[in-house]
Length: 184
Length: 184
DNA sequence: TACACTATGTTATATTATCACATCTAGTGT
DNA sequence: ACACTAGATGTGATAATATAACATAGTGTA
Ligand SMILES: [Zn+2]
Ligand SMILES: [Zn+2]
Ligand SMILES: [Zn+2]
Ligand SMILES: [Zn+2]
Image (cartoon, rainbow over all chains, first blue to last red; front, side, top):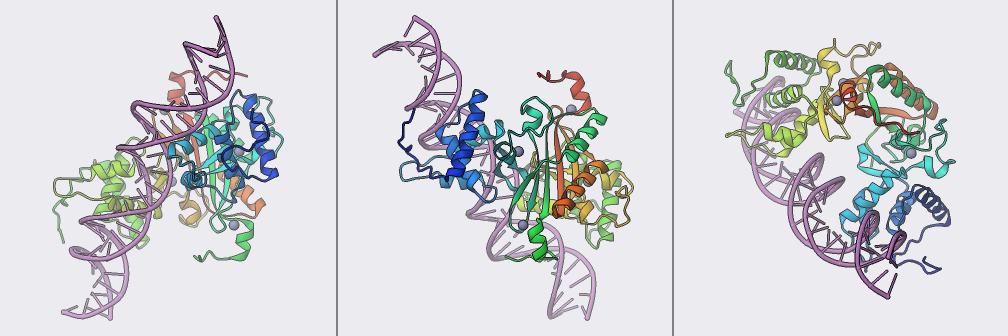
């Protein structure tokens, strides 16, 4: 137990982020897993980032005068968070985002099923990736997932995970630039 | 000019593969692009591979006593082939497959539309990735694409590319290994 | 030929991710 | 308290994937 003292690392997250982290911790304990300080910090950084974060970005951010962690530290935390459905990896960006599902909604239970977040829900997600502002939005369209499931059923393919990554311009950016000129 | 002589590199592709390469060449010239010997060889290797191929695998394969190409050689060829819709990159595998669409079908025109392979068709694909036998199948399910388009329209998101990667067990492998006991 | 353009070669480096092994820590049972 | 165990972290090296920057060679055209 860590009384009222702050841990060694800063961990200066906003109350809102802290609330999300607490919620994530609850989900972990319910799964018999531990959201350690290290993992908590990584998840907090991902939550606070406006856009997906790369592993080495995180590595830089958790460095301090006292601690100089190496890549495995970050990757191990990321693996944990991925396995427990707290974050997703955006393949096209080699970067990570928090699962909006788990943290903002009521436990991701628009699954309609009862089974709580089994592998089917865990490893399946869909994203809109804006090439202009770099924002990534996790969407949960039943129609897409249903179409995927139907196709696989028809082929006899057993789904273990599925990801949909859609790149383009978000509504805001599409209005600003009608034609995609390459600006910087 | 090197007349009828075989090029320096072996290029020992089967007649079937050669036919596909010729077809790809036709597609390129129609687009005002050149399927050079180098690009042709890379595409041939990808076509002949039973499963997706990594860039460095290709690099090894095109090495010969005379030629020791470097990574950019391969990556430039891959970029060309990607831009012309002859291959796809499987993000989850960091590997490349030939577009079955373009080479096996009749010019990918089950798009139903008339526009011949514009960016919408070009940069959009769906794959079934078997974790057991490593086979990758490109599927073209209108239902999935339609669901994606509908979602984006609703959000005001302008699609530039979309990819769907589904991992699991193909029908053949799923039979061998009984389904992973769906505990409920 | 001279020119512009595309393609390729070459060297170095950037970026992302994992291995292997040592050490530490938290919980468990005695 | 003690030892034990499993999980978590530290550390150094390295693997795997991808690009930058600049030089050279080929290709088509005026
Ligand atoms: Zn999610
Ligand atoms: Zn945007
Ligand atoms: Zn295709
Ligand atoms: Zn299989």
